[in-house]
Image (cartoon, rainbow, N blue to C red):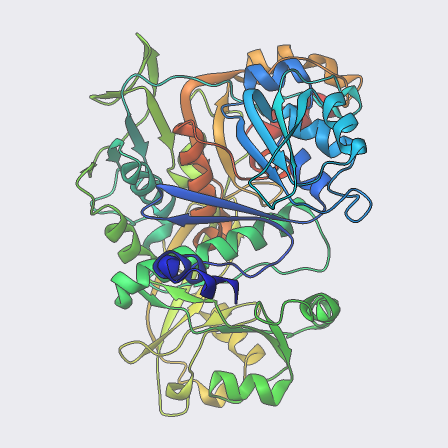
Length: 555
């Protein structure tokens, strides 16, 4: 309603509403005007949210290590007695840690309690006279933070701010992670060279012509489930923009995730009370409702996720590379990276920034050999459609998934073979995929006539979260944080030790279509020295250095 009060802002309001997210707890990233303007919405307890923006909680290191500070704060006009959470002294102290010498703070509240708390947080406070007929307001400027050692944490995950002389980057790998990274950097004004051993973009694990997009919803809160929900919501917004330009690349018409066994039934039942608050995200449906949505008779109840769907991942890769600032070099095998004269040398190309994004092979370099990437072989099977199966309207997922008919065929997938890089297609894997169709509906619906198959090698990590961020110098990192071995919460006032300008974006497993857009957007912001927009707990959760830290702590 309030948007109607300013008709001159109609177009801008439309832009906001077009990308306004589903208001689930956590951080939401919104972008406008080709990433020139960004908005981060933080939904949750104010103190918890703002503390997730801190580097480490130490007033000295916050000033030294963070790549941005807040320029101005505007706090609502509710008095401390009416909104105590906003005026909590811990929150105001956190605002101080996020501020710099020129930061201002304004609020219509003039309560004495507020003045005292702001001064304690390092602000110089004064009362200002407003225009005639309006109440006075509080105006403050930041001076210096007071120490809050109770929340101080070792900043092992922090990559110190590094100035870039020339905005040029090399991307090793032309799968979805590499192509997406190249695209978002190019949109930020970077010149990007993409190198891949294949003959065309998206010819590895990203060659899936019908990859399914869906979240990993869970009533159990963990870094994995929180990251996957944030990633899904961001991906939906990004893919809708792409489909507006290239509608042939996929469909976001929803999926049904069947409760095909007891474990899945329990997991979905546990979502019921949580989903009641977010009915637009997903809803539980009985067997009849699931069948109606899918267009065919299904074998169980399930979870309907309306914004999910599928994408032609290979075509998406090729679309993302169509940017004038991207130079694409096929048939280029990269076996080593070297660094001298403040530049990385990759084959015959050089740049200050390199992003390793070649999937399960990302650990082949000397700099990344410590990373616990594992190869997982998956085989998909294509069968002919028939009259009954042609009524399938949306993807149906269980232990396997099947997609609506495209050009007279259905795609089924995928098998899962850990630590396997064999690209040969096996008949037994086709048989396994066909056997899983019985979980979805009666076998009489499907033709069972195999037309073709496809094999992809995914890259995964032990905790199922990707590796996104700067690459640590393993030996120096172990030495710098050796003190964590005897006390995992020990305060070590030093940032992580990383190779200058070397990053990795890999380990997405079978959920790359879902998690790559958010991961890459965060990585590009880091490379471009922009304000961060992920909560610290998720930055740590996807940091490639987390496994070195775990190794030290276990030791």
